[in-house]
Length: 528
Ligand SMILES: *[C@@H]1O[C@H](CO)[C@@H](O)[C@H](O)[C@H]1NC(C)=O
Ligand SMILES: *[C@@H]1O[C@H](CO)[C@@H](O)[C@H](O)[C@H]1NC(C)=O
Ligand SMILES: [Zn+2]
View 1 (tube, rainbow, N blue to C red):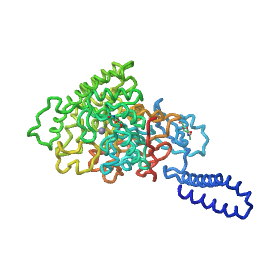
View 2 (spheres, helix red, strand yellow; view 1 turned 60 degrees about the vertical axis):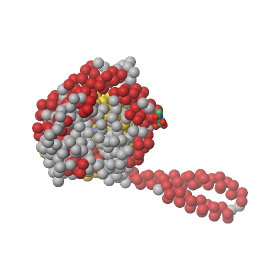
View 3 (cartoon, helix red, strand yellow; view 1 turned 120 degrees about the vertical axis):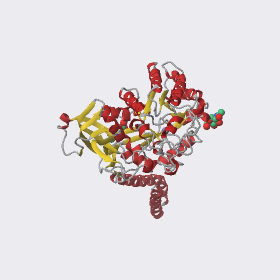
View 4 (cartoon, rainbow, N blue to C red; view 1 turned 45 degrees about the horizontal axis):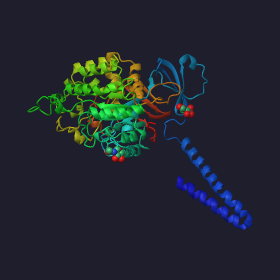
């Protein structure tokens, strides 16, 4: 478009020059002075013509208008579930009214009436690996964010590893941002990596934080990715002191390395048996890491060396000692939170067939008794939020035919399914719609520092998911699945409840009933 604009203004200039010669020489001086102005005016005219054309032909949304009402009998707001309507204008929620007051609103306005379906803030997934750039054959921004939109996720924060190179510097963050631009169907923020290379280099860390990562992530055991080495408690202590200044969190994969504790002997155990894998990553690995972590989390207390920083334990699986330690840290005023993932809440070791490596992840899915305790902790508010930890790869690396649990890629593919999975498996524990919004929107928004997201309130971005808790469906070949490799997902073939009907991102209807808006209009989110 810029080239075209320049050609047009060039032509205008030529014509003016010709007429110029016919008139007297004294006119020339004056004309030369107004020429730049005329050129500028013509560019502006063309620019407004084209931008006008772009918005009237809005590929970002499946709706042809940008001011409308979303109406439902079940809108999940911070004040509870209400019957009423949400007004959306441009990118924002401009009012939320109860049914009684809605009656007075002038008719003739555009209304999307969803009846009994649930209208909830869009989900915020603070833990996903989209593997872009460098390993986009594993997932990639386009398919990953299409899956997110189809699953009711309007914001996700991408992990700094599994893409290549890992996101551990300003240069590698630049690559990430470039890969995301014009390729994302939902909003995407980025965690940076805290690794031994930058942990003691505060200027490198500050540069990364200034470049916009929402916080940092580190591993206390080998990550499985060569250019993302593990950190110990002293690296973490240093990282926290830099994060404190920016008031951003550190997310930690809390398992210690297997050789640092006495490990069971696996000699002679069948690598196709899930129990062999389970035995290789005992709860003691999580407990040991959290114990170590809590020696530095003290720094986050009021008046501590790293006050303002925050420590977040990702994907907790062990529901016993590990959780008690985290509880204790919270009681002591440390700034600590913890997440778990739907696969720890849906599955248990007893259900996993020999050789079914779709279920391999770290820390591992533990037994049914542990799962019950995780639900109990979640319902009691001891686990702060949920995340997907969507961590796909190519089917070849899952070794589905071979079934070797010790050699297969560890990671569960789940991005599109987290909403129905949480709902389906949580119903028997009495899970409420408010809790869904709390774990999937409100608390993740706080962790990621997103003030205008995570709740349906006036002034927030219109990031909204509409879903039907009562519709059940099979995840079979007829179901529109958008993750790149559905065959490696442990959820395929399951019957789930809670169907996503529509997803709105900053006012754009980006997904409805199997269909996405044509253009990828998600924004990259950079911290300021
Ligand atoms: C949306 O809200 C932002 C502030 O959060 C404001 O700057 C913008 O003008 C609002 N847009 C509309 C269409 O109301
Ligand atoms: C710290 O990081 C900066 C920026 O990446 C780099 O230029 C510098 O050499 C590093 N310092 C040390 C001591 O490694
Ligand atoms: Zn992960």
